[in-house]
Image (cartoon, one colour):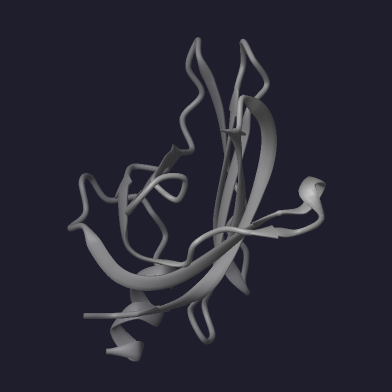
Length: 136
């Protein structure tokens, strides 16, 4: 299964809609600006798709871990593909309010990391998260 994952993550994303690749991850978040306040750990499902040169990544899980990112640039969002030889990554910035999101997955070991600007106790803060993923 790791070979399949390595092949999939290493593909050039020039095909039309690719099949959704699914992984399950155990994640834990912190809020660095609040003395590294630890958030409740969670199990999430990570879905990855490609359409042409664009990547789409969705994390299904409880708040605040649930995220959707893509590499598209629209009137509302600016997306970036951060993929390189060591990891796959996406970044989104909300153009109007400046909120940022980023997710990275290492090719070796399937380590997940990232951050997201969230509202916590009526205050906008950056949540950092990390975890490990495995294929079903």
